[in-house]
Image 1 (cartoon, rainbow, N blue to C red):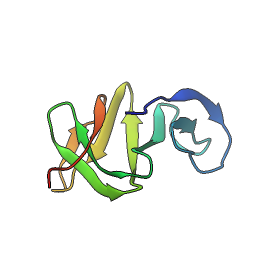
Image 2 (image 1 turned 90 degrees about the vertical axis):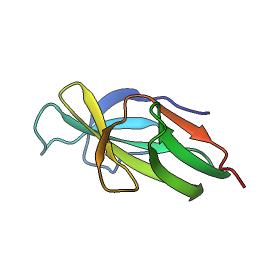
Image 3 (image 1 turned 180 degrees about the vertical axis):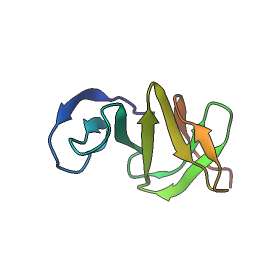
Length: 91
């Protein structure tokens, strides 16, 4: 699994994979990141095995508010996204 977030930078360009960006027009504590599992067929899950996304070449937007990373699961619930993993889906 490839993961990582670089230090935040203040500029208005969209976030790049594996990089956290602070948006100048957002509140000072808000930030976004993109989690990516690469180009294979994977499922992106939280540490609690909640599915966030699945497919080939997937990207998932995660957001932080304060010190908590949050994401929307495939069922539409907001979950803690502080620990993510890419798994190969069962056939």
